[in-house]
Length: 378
Image 1: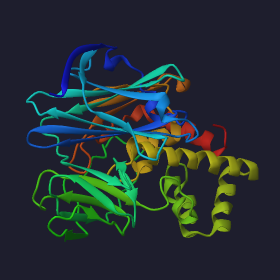
Image 2: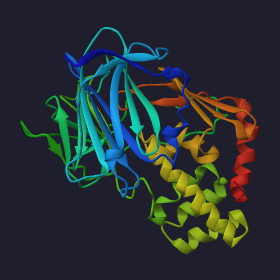
Image 3: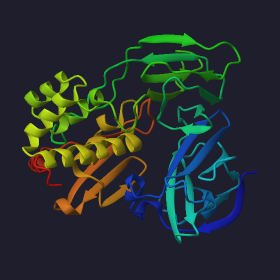
Image 4: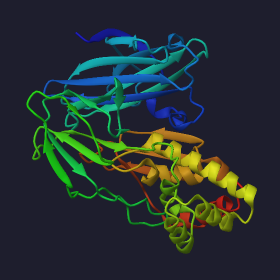
């Protein structure tokens, strides 16, 4: 049995401000992967400290199962939880839950004895959840993206069909564009290859989206992006595209034509800010936000291209984040009670994908904040 009958007293998950999920000051990263088979959900959780000088022994993870977000208590889950061998800054855990007809809520509570603080995380366990394998790279859990030219280990069902998508996914459109940017129902496959029988590893040589399935007609599988120079961009040629949110068309064309030429790139940045020091500050601050968007919001496309990534880059960390089974609500008190709603738009490539509810009312505030960026007053 994996359930322990003793209740855990906590708080309703729907009432928590989850802005710490996207805070650069959070002392650790927490990754969770849900894998569904015909009989069980398997949940893999991994905590990694941002400051490797600290000890993971200062942290503990406790898992519980609830039936709804308004519940204040759940049933403890037994599972293995241990520090990763030879890694004093990583803690991993694995739980198993029988599949039921009802939707359940898997809760992880992280507690720090040193900081005297606790954080709640949760994932919805849906009976039809399409992911049927977990991915690891050098024993590190992959939830959204991994490195190119590095072996990826597949843990789960026997999956042998690999589809590679080299689509150029467009960046998010501004929040006042009322056409919702949903995932295309069908993506064009660039290439397909098959693993030898019994093999559980692949090496992604190209940047792009990979979908791993039992066969190409299956409705289940696991997807991830393979990336280089990511989530932080260091190559000048990779800095152009994320500037689409703050550049005019003419400026964007110029920065794209720079093609890795740093002097040409810097010239465009200077033309935008009209001051050398402001240009430096702009580039430093903007691409720090791009890095964080890639870290937190990578999906079937790069994190900065997603709706949440776009809003995060331009407006920064929300003051409040409230999560529900079908949506997230971001509140910015610093921008006059500005609020964005992201609704669930799942696909096989990302069952937890969220898209922004766009409204015309955002247009004035959007251009106001873009102007602040262009003058390095943020």
